Length: 164
Image (cartoon, rainbow, N blue to C red; front, side):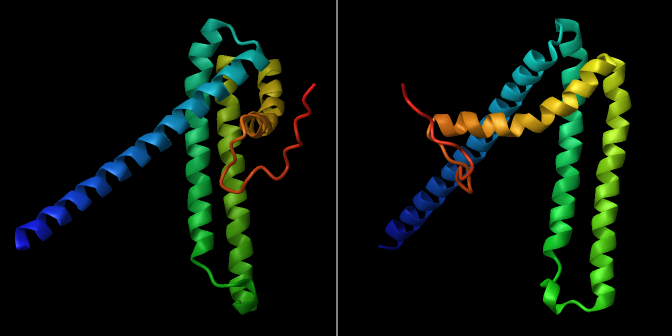
């Protein structure tokens, strides 16, 4: 009886570990697919040559990774706090200053990579990048909506697709 319990416990533990590993692989696959789609959109919209792609895309990928790290750090710091209504004036001032600091760090990162981008592609393409970058998220959401998939929060802003 005891060996059956131990065997079942080991089996369930193994199934749980395999399930978690598969979930991690799914996340990595989705991230890789997203990076591939973003690279394709940027290549198409900016009309990048093959040489420009090889020089620009790794720099862009690094930029996005650093910006995600900044956002995660900022988000983690915000979660540590209390509810706004429970804060006194000094604590509120600290929260506001921290928000300014986070925005300044993001601006510094953008300025740093602006110079890096100019080294790899023309200034016209850099300017177009900033415009295209704003629309990438929208394109990705629309594409996801057309397939019938929904993100974590759903696709509230997607307009229904009319069939002909």
